[in-house]
Image (tube, rainbow, N blue to C red):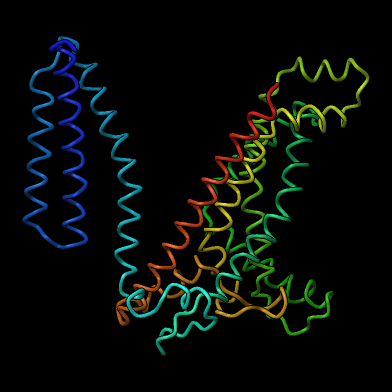
Length: 352
C-alpha cells in the first residue's frame, strides 16, 4: 500500500474514532450525567476532526464535502443506536420491579396501584392495526389500479395532487374529523345496526376507521409509483396476445410491481401501528380487551400519549411508558427487517 493510501486510511480511521467519541460523549451527558467525560470526549472529537482537515489535497471542496457526507451518514446510523440505548436505559427501573413476561402477559394496567400489565393494550393495538389494514389494502389497491390504468389523463392529473396532500395532513386533523364525524356515526348508526345500543362511539372500530383513512394515501401513492414503473412494452405485449385490460393488470402489472406493492403495505402498517394522536382522540383510552369492536380500548402509542401528564409524579410510570416505547421500536424494527427479507425474495421471483 502506498504512503498516500495509508494516509487516507489513517484519516478515515481517525474520523470514525472521532465520531464514536462524539456519540459516547452524548451518552455520558444525557444518560450518565457525567459532564467531565462529555467534555473530554467532545474535545477528542474536535481534535480528530481538525486533524482530518489540516492536510487536504488540492481538491479542497471535494475533500470537505466527502467528509461532511461521511459524518452525516455515520451520525444517522449512530442515532438509531442512540435511541435504542436511551429506551433500554429508561426501561431498567420497571424491569427491575417486574419481569418482561409479567409486563407483557398481565392484563391489568393500574399505575397508581403498581400494576403495569400491557396484555390488553397489546391486543387492542393488534386488533386496531389489523382492521385498519384489512379496510385500507383492498380499497387502496383498487383506487391505485383505476388511477393508473383506467382513469382519463385529466382526471388522473386532478386526483394525484389531492392524494399527495392528504398524505401530509397532520394526524391531529384526522383525529378531530373522526371526533366530529365518525364518533357520532358509530354511536348512532353503525353500532345499533350490529345490535350494540350502548356504544359511546369512542371505540376500537372508530380508531380503525380513521387509521385506514390515514393509510390510504400512503399505499395509493406508492402503488401508483410501482404501477407507473412497469414498462409499457409489457402491457402492450399482453394486450396484443388477446388479454383483457383486467387480465393484463392481474397477470402482468401485479406481478411486475409486486415488490413495490409489498413496500407500500409495510409502510402503511408502520403508520397504523405507531399512530398516536388520532387514535388517542377516538379510541376511548381504557386499558381493557373490548368485548366488541364498538367498545373502548387503548393502543400502545395512545397509552403513552394519555399517561404522559402523570410521568413527573410517578417515576416508575415514566419507566413503564419508556418500556412501551421500546416495544413499539422493536416491533416496527422487526417488521421492517421481515419486510426487507420478503422484498428481496419477491424481487428475485418477480423479475421481468
